[in-house]
Length: 523
Ligand code: GDP
Image (tube, rainbow, N blue to C red; front, side, top):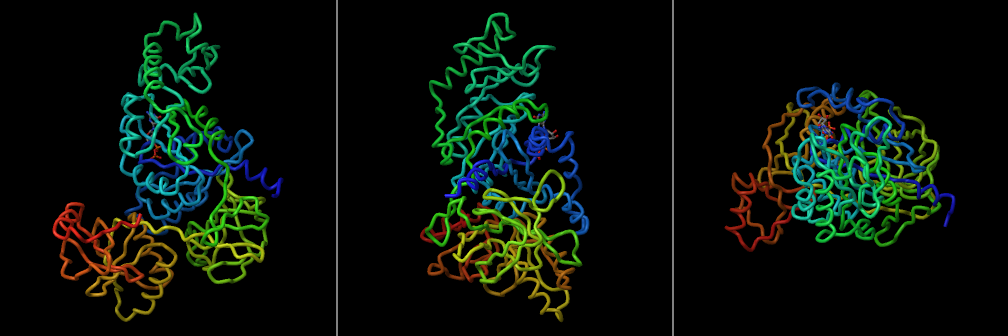
């Protein structure tokens, strides 16, 4: 064991925020950066959330990406800990990268709009987090507005996501009448609008408001006490082991916009969230984060600002050892040696040269085509290979062909490389062998099309097939006659057959018609 290294590792808290668009992810991120002293005014992070990618060309995307590359990872110090927030792009740039980022974190923060409850994108992202079994902390946002009943919101976690919610604090009133938050762990109330000169926190004795305080005899506070009693009688009690195993989510209430409850949340989160732990390597071994040798895996590759140089940044999650500039590593896939001279780490809003990075940290490597998503790199003699990253089931599909049939060669070259890089998924029509691309977000297609043209000199024709439900079928059960216009039969790049159903209804119809046929969804 390396004590000095372990001390550093134990200071790391690496997480991502999962939410549905507009729940308040950007706003809460910004408040956290303010608390961390990284930015001085609100609006900094927000500024990048502009424009409409769908109509913009790649250069435009690049310009915006220039900002989003640096905000892909946000690092700051808080309470003696080093916090890494990994951005999970939503909206138009929701993509497989969004999912893969969740492979590189040790915890997730789930932000929910308290008026809307759990929404579709949150559900999808939660599923990935659940699969990994990492802890999830919930922030019920927008308490400054009238929302749903707090008891309802907590119950919904169990009903919709199947995870036990345990309240860490409880709102006193809501919207116009929001008075404060009852902090259960610290037995105190945090006032929403303390009077001039008044302390923001009121300590409670035996769960009672001190005489003369604004809470004494307040009917809303009485109501809150009643709810808490209900909660304690019927609800779950906080269990750290369950939280760490991803079976229970601590629930915090607040309002990111008015910066209410965010600090309380962050304080407890930093305290309760796990430091980087062991990683599975070489099939069945556990690698300790304080292992002397550096290792990590690439979870994201981002085409960079300058297409002429074709440089990209490969994002590495450090899993053990310590990164230093000029480190020689081996790429497990090829056995090739690579010297890591050109790396960046992500501090505040600028990219800086890496000073020190240990397990939990993210390092960006300038890449000229060495790396692929899912690659393992390691220093030292012992080979360290991390499990492959899961592939995520695409939901959007496009037919693709070269505009100029004379240019098949560059078309195939570009296609192969971009598919390997994980930019899009490739399928072939089972009967005609036509190319079909799959993605989880529209932007992936636009980036693909642009890069085909600019990097491989291949103009592509794309026709949307739209949303489809992809389900793999056991090849032994396959009869090509099962295919129809409503369930397009294709094969993935490994040759496995799957159906692209027009919608869930078409899938159910298929089930009814072929009850013995097993269909599986990857993840
Ligand atoms: P994102 O899409 O999840 O990143 O959401 P944003 O942070 O951009 O927030 C979406 C909208 O909700 C913006 O107009 C925010 O100002 C607003 N918003 C975020 N947090 C709160 C909150 O606590 N209360 C209220 N009333 N509005 C909020």
